[in-house]
Each structure stands twice: as C-alpha cells, then as structure tokens.
Length: 152
View 1 (cartoon, rainbow, N blue to C red):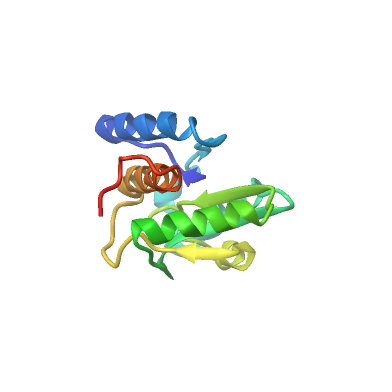
View 2: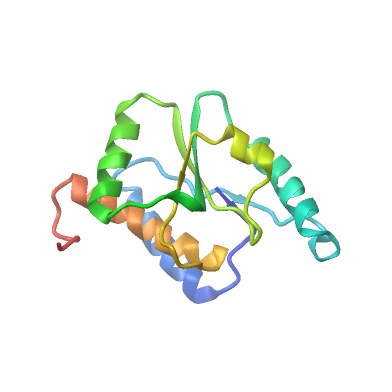
C-alpha cells in the first residue's frame, strides 16, 4: 500500500516489472491510496494525519501491517526472505507492507503497525522506495524457491 501515484515513468516501468514477477509466487496487489487534496497548503502534521486516516480505512481485521520506516529493522536479502517466510507461516490473513508519504506516518498508523522494516540507513524518496522494495520482495521469493536470481 502506497500513498500517491508514481510520477516518474522509469519508476512505473520498474515497479510494474517486479509486480508482474511477484504474481508468479503469491497473490500481490500494489494498492495506491490517492494523494490528499490541497496537500501543499497543509502542515507536515496535517498531511500525516490525513494520510493516516486514509491508510487506516484500508486496513482489515487480521492484517499484519508492516511499515517501511527509517527506524525499522534492517535485513540482508536472505534475512528478509526468512522473515517473509515466517510471517506467511503464521497464518495472517494479509501481509500488508505500507510506504507512506514524504513525511512518514501518523501516530495512529504507528499504533496499528505490527512491525517496521527499513531498507537502508540511507534516505530514499518515497517513490524510489517502491521500486527498491518490490524488487527486494521478488528477490525474497526467488531465494525461498532456490532460484538463481540472488547471488551471495
């Protein structure tokens, strides 16, 4: 689940490539929550609150909610694949990864989250993170299946 559309065609192409590949392993949907209206006139706190309300309305009972957050747990690609496998084996209804807007998440969204992960100590644009994350998720499934995509 992501806030706002992807503006750059090269990112859209890459994201679509990996989303298509992921669908060979698991049912996968990239849910895009539309940008909030008049966001440029809102403060950072107001944007996070409004985006948070939109996100909260999309969560379902039984969801395991994972925020992509700079303060989350970091993994190697192999470690992430093991983590994904363990989450899938717990029987959660939906494993929902959430990429927020440019200012992150509201406290209400943090309160609903079951976990937080970080892709890097570096900061990426919230649009760039989409491509990096879907590639890493695809990589995790190829590792779990023992396919030759990942090299140590």
